[in-house]
Length: 110
Image 1 (cartoon, helix red, strand yellow):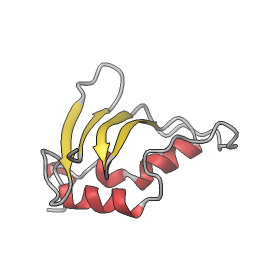
Image 2 (cartoon, rainbow, N blue to C red; image 1 turned 30 degrees about the horizontal axis):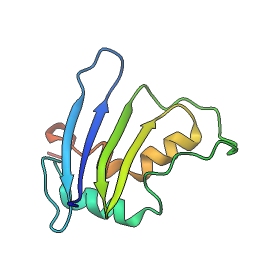
Image 3 (tube, rainbow, N blue to C red; image 1 turned 135 degrees about the vertical axis):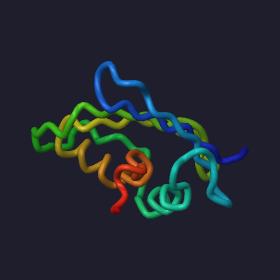
């Protein structure tokens, strides 16, 4: 089974989704930074695990962004959802920033 993820990010209600594919060994797909995304996934322990239901999370709002990652990674099925609705979810998003919010042309220094 080949490793391939589909990453879908929506910046907020009514926004068009951004969608990329990501493959490994070697890093590739349509993701803007496949090498950085693969490094981020390899660096984070259990990158697709949800926040445990008993976890106490700081009640702060990080923004309307949502994302899903589906497919297969390192031989395992993946079906994960991300949002920025509290401190725990913001932390999950931040750990995978290279996957979920890769820099675009307007984000690069001039």
